[in-house]
Structure formats: C-alpha cells, structure tokens
Image (cartoon, rainbow, N blue to C red; front, side):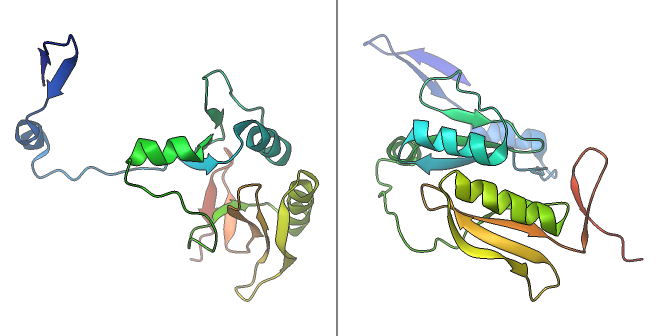
Length: 174
C-alpha cells in the first residue's frame, strides 16, 4: 500500500491487490463465523431500549450513533437506516415493507423458554406474527417482528443441543 498526499492536504491510498493476492495463492480464506449483524433502524434510542428489554443484555452505547449488543458468538449492531444505506453506497435506495426473505433466529433450550422470550418481546413492543406452536419439522417456534419490522424466530428443536459454552450444535445421530 502506498500513501500519497494530495494538493488539498488529503491522503489517498493505493493498493496493489495482485501483490497481496500472491500471498494467499492456493489458500482459500475461510469466513469462520458471522461476527456482527447490523440492523438499520428508524429510531436508534427506541431500538436500543427494545433490544435491551428483549435480549436482557446491556447495550454498548459508548460510540456515538451506533449501538452494539455484545452476544456470545455474534454481536448485533443497531445503526440508523439512512446512514447504513449511505455507508453501503449513495445509490442504495431505502425501501421498507414486505418480507425480505431473511429472518433472525434464537434457539431456546426448551419450549417454555420459547414462550417466555416471545412474551418478553411482546411486552417490549414487538408484534407477534406467529404465536409459539408445534412445527411441521418436529420443533416448537414462534415469530415476532421488532420495532423496525425485522422478523425473529424463537425456536426449540429436538435436533439441537448446547455445548457447555452455550454454542448451538446439532445432536449426533450416530
């Protein structure tokens, strides 16, 4: 990488990507886990309060204009929707409504936990779109939409178990 000072005092960086690509020749980079899920929200303060109530985890609001909810394995960040769209590209239109084809999920340890979590979400202002119930796949789940319309599934399934550290795993069928 090289830095060049422009006449206006700004620095510009240039990178020879071919040079860096040679370091990983024959090696495929593995993305080992999702680390942060960012949700674009209409009202940051309101969304922060909602997620603190539902997840029971104190949010990290030490950085202006963004909230981090530090969960084991993956964090959730809340960021104003308009700013998130601009961060991606000025050409990204902000559209809301309808089902995007994406849901967020939390696997609970029991059917009772599913019910309790959905009720906690309802109490915090979520719209429950599917009450907790037995599923066609042998589990038990319900869905709610958060304050910005993101769909969450809260589920328990007989094929899942939790490691000692809380990591979700598929049960060994062998």
